Figure 1 (cartoon, rainbow, N blue to C red):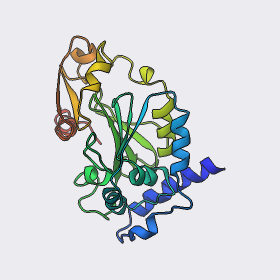
Figure 2: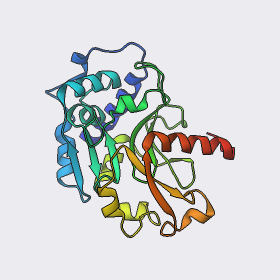
Figure 3: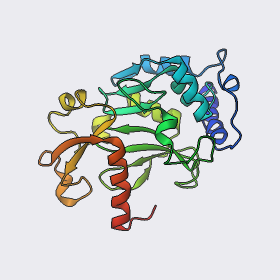
Figure 4: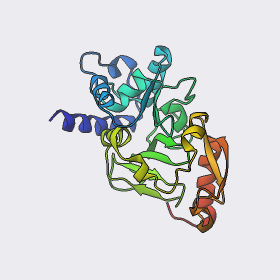
Length: 246
């Protein structure tokens, strides 16, 4: 029942985010009924390596206000309680309120993408990304009829692939799923060492591109790290050039 309630809170939070009238920070922070203790328990039992990035409380309040989600939800509690969360030495980066290691907050990263100004309706929220230029999005209605579900903007297809999971289930995916299987064919021999050295605001860019036939053998592809903003824009530009419908 509690897990069901948390899922509902995530959906309610996304609905709240789409409203134009912004609630004050006092209405968003709920110390007595926070979702954070549950996230902590999930992390303690996680099968994958999880790193919680330290938080600056003033930045956290600002990020929570701009995101307009309550701390009762897993997303709100992560924004408020963390600078972000890293999975597998930073292979996956779950956005929070920002940190030296992950110098992007969830609302700031989404500004100019899912919405133009804070408080505006959002068709999607970018909630996490990975080291090979893949992006995880929470559907606000712009990606399909499955409102509140997670999509993967895949670098090997340039498609928004539905994962059929909620934000809460996405956390479980990050903490416990077999990521080797999910990323099968896209983890090269030295990926652990390379990713550990990679800034979480940068990603690996591959040539040939991963979405080409020639790019399917990642061991033969050359790679360099580029700014994640640049990679996101490249992915969108390639979709337009290839005539892929959104």
